[in-house]
Image (cartoon, rainbow, N blue to C red; front, side):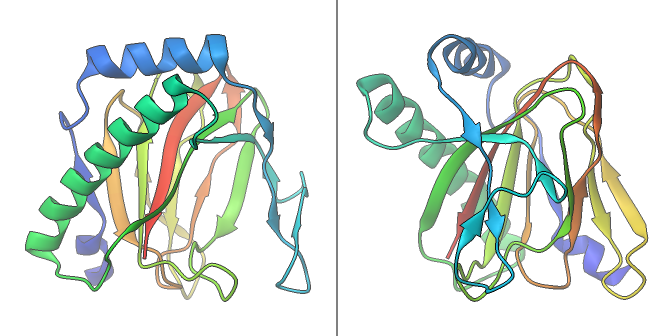
Length: 188
């Protein structure tokens, strides 16, 4: 599939030692909340565990540790963006948000695209933090047939960047064992 070339995988950008430190921080200090989706009115956010069964934490100035990790992750994401932009120039200018997602056993996210009217986005990024779980694969779907055409296996520190638009619907398969942690972010 031609659009596949815009999904880029970067290994080794986020060193495994730093990933381990971040996972330790997340497991010991972070308080997650149920992740939301856009409601039927396209204006309000709601928790709908039939669409998205995961928890989220946003890096913002809540503590010095959160500020530290947020700034470090922003640095990594900008580094990835610069590499991506060399091959596929875009109009993205800034990192919109940085969150860590926690998928416990049974956690999933049905097929969706990241760009929508309430939150227009140009590029999406995921950084896998662990691989000591089963299931939880990142799947890309054909935008016409909705069939999965690409599955990305997790590897600690593996970064994936792709366009956020409707041509790149994706999903997260249910976690069948363990807990999956990943950083997600978007550029606008």
